[in-house]
Length: 538
Image (cartoon, rainbow, N blue to C red; front, top):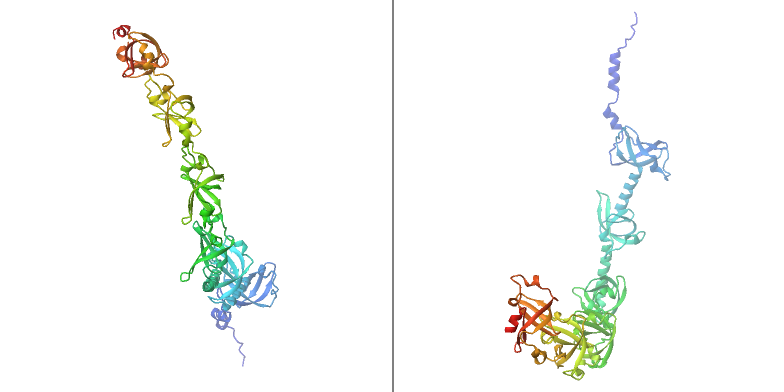
């Protein structure tokens, strides 16, 4: 019997071998389940200068950057650590891990397990960021700028490195952030202090406080959990234009409690009430007609305010500044900080009012104006002002006399004072009348000479030739001045104008030869003619 050699069927062998190989599913079942964003355990296999290779039980090893282990003694082959899976497949097909991020997540989870919303914790201010501060409460948390204090903070730099109590306002597990508030802690503390203070405080108490805020109408003072209003009118017995003249934010001041509203937790405060009211018995200190000294502290269009002493400010009305001058504004006579003497005109303790007079320190020149300037007296002065109806001449300091336009010339027709006088001219005049009650002095210039209509004019006859100069040109004729003070009219009908404009033929100052055609003593008019025959026959 011949033994048969066993035959080898390659196809059958390969088929059996393939059937006995583990499938891909079988292989994946043997690996540790790994997902991106999760923390997983891993064993350090090897490392070099840039990377650390870790076995996480996955189909491929994970890679961790070597710099994550700087200063960390946990880098040891075979050591098991926890890592965060950042990516299961990067651009090079590698699994990327992070030990640092895993540590932070574990720290966050550990910290959050000890914290809860509403809890009060101690924390240290670490640094500034946009919108607030980072506070270390065992883990970094966010302190919004609005929650730093109960009042605006000028500089966050002063808080960095300091430790305070904070309330945990919100924990966001999904975003892994914590929001804290210091303001709520302070407000709760202030609320307790406010209730305690309101139960103890009384009207008339003197309290120490800190200036918290300044407005145009007053100052808010922190009394230790309770804010009180110090109104500007209660800061000083004297005038204050703005509270910042007296206090500054942060100042520690002593105030008196004036009023308490416990239901609305409001307190009114005062400073001036700590001292005696200077207006008490004011009439005894400053009786009417007494001469007093003071300092000008303010000017208004209607007068000046004068401080006699701290808290006593009085009005010097513009009408009481000069006997003679027409004062348009107090600044014409006084300026701020001037030390002056004045006379007390009236006092009212009830209304806190006292009026002064400056002019009363001198004798009223109008009281003796009739003695100093009698009617008919010749006076000298300077033209101080010119109006449509006349010129004002200063005949002594502060007293003007009026030269009316009608009293400037016996013979000339003066339409405006500027035809005869100008401002600044030195003139002589005669006193025509004095009215001390109404404070008026009338002057005349023409009265310095005799009325020519009663004397010299009578010497002129019809047809008489005169030499003069053109003084005025009108539509109906020209006026000619002659013999210094006389003036006559040459009517256009008596001029050889032949239809031409008089302004084209004659100019002011032109020399003229004319003839007297008529002298009217009643109307005080002299008519002239360029025609000698008309003059002779007139």
